Image 1: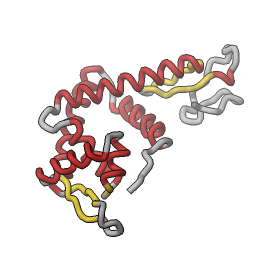
Image 2: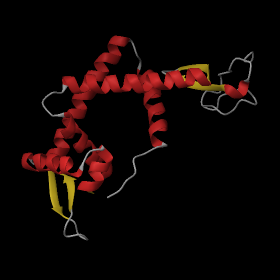
Image 3: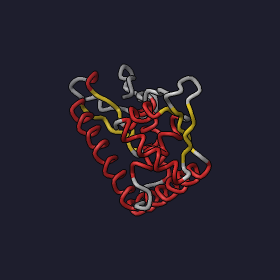
Image 4: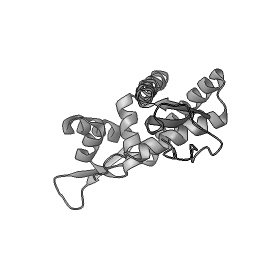
Length: 185
């Protein structure tokens, strides 16, 4: 949302001017989507927001289908550890929205593969701290490279430019950055 309706300009896009014929300028939002700035109503904003969630989920599923050698749960755990850093089983289970026994089993499997390590918690003898190993970081880097290759190929096929992608990534950073995961270790 621009928030600069008094002078009908958009802070992110100074050359943009929302439609001055709109019924109620306070109900308009400017959305920069793939380098195209459009004015939408609150209803349209809701519909576009829903479409973003639906299409993002479809993209994630498509990527997962094309990277079948590492299960999705393993990829999620490696990514969570990359994001959160060394964490307890409870914090990982909460972040992944699964039970502690499920997370313990997943951690056990990745410890056996050498992708994560599990060490006693320094302050609680009953708990442990899980962290990525160098091998786990390598697996995650390879997965992300293959994901990027797939998405880059799809973007090229769709005719998207580098600027289109940069705008989309910037927008997602803005959205996700405002509601980060609760970092509980």
